[in-house]
Length: 202
Image 1 (cartoon, one colour):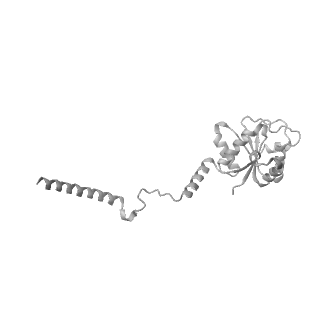
Image 2: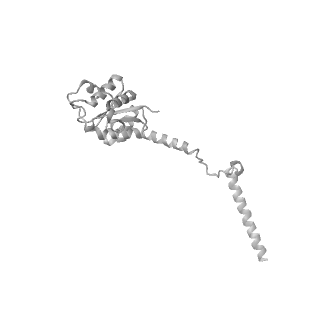
Image 3: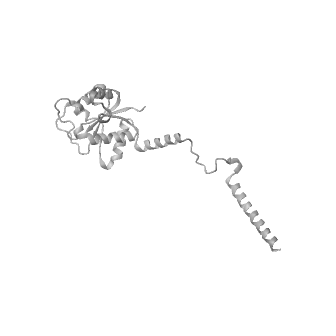
């Protein structure tokens, strides 16, 4: 089973990018955890904490407004703190227009300094391929080839030869001999037709 990747984001500002990252990673064969689709509202933090403990890498979605100070529970801050405590690799994903705030809590400032990926619409596929490789996944082209190979195995061995399956190759002979046989049979056929016409003329 592939490793789990946790995706952390601020719902008000990072929803679209987080779900795009989620879809792109899954299309490359990466298992992901994202709170909206996976969590039970009745036990929010225990499930989030368990997912962080189970993950092999932590993807942090960085958009403008993601790191503003919040009153009450700051879920992004709690998630980053848990991942840092556990020593999980943190990979920031920056939106194309992201501007790093002048003032950041030390924990978040450290998280945004790790090796990450900047989303560029001009190099969309390359950016997600790079992110997939950072979390231990594949490029999209590699995943498509893998899926095609697995699908071929599931359908059974495909015969790529053009000869009928019920005629052994040994009985048919090499291609050159087959061509000579066809030409010889054709000559004999024409001679027989000529003989038949000559007999009718007599």
